[in-house]
Image (cartoon, rainbow, N blue to C red):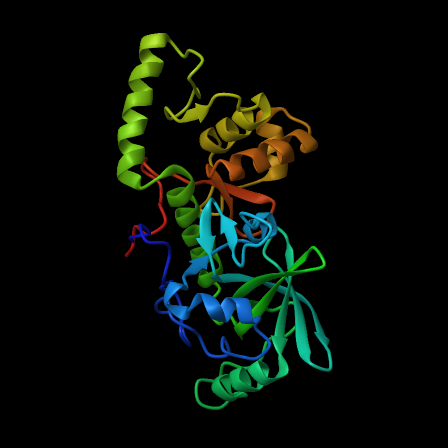
Length: 297
């Protein structure tokens, strides 16, 4: 995948305008603010994200009309999550989604909902059905903020039929995050080789600290809890689903609170990811023998 000009497509179930940087159905709705329209749809990008990234997004300056994620301008986003609540309002339907990294309100204006309902149908051709509470859904839309509270104005929200899409999305969002926060994979390869040589020459000096297993270079300042959690996940036999935090705590000899803090630190570094639930983790191998997002096309 090429993210050099921002992220413009997602390849899993990307329907209804998710292929490219133009507008999607509903994006010209009068409910979108005029400042977004002024920017022009030719500048739009579509990026897979987690809810935590949306919660951490910020304006580059007070008058900015867009948000920054990983220092990159972001307009349209897509994410998946479990629907915790559906609230019917006079002008919109508000969904509360949880993806294991946080919760976010998603608002679908009534006219856009009618458009989506017409396209999705109610069990007719395609048989996609409707979004329901406790079910999983994919959202396409724009991040907005009102009274210092963020929400997503959705162009499309549809139920997920294939639950592999949930894990695919998290892996894809991780790959894009690593690209913008650390650079393209080829640069990481070169930097990793240089850091490995430096670490060998200085016998594990101040620049980088090397974990005992697998030769994974950990950034300077990484906490001891995070390194013990990483070591426990790497060295403990496990299935493709990874390890639950209770197993990690036992293997690492840590209290549960320390494991959770260490896990959050490793997730922020892009070294682990959640699998079957938010408390089951696996290593994300980028340069090693493990699976890396995008490996299968």
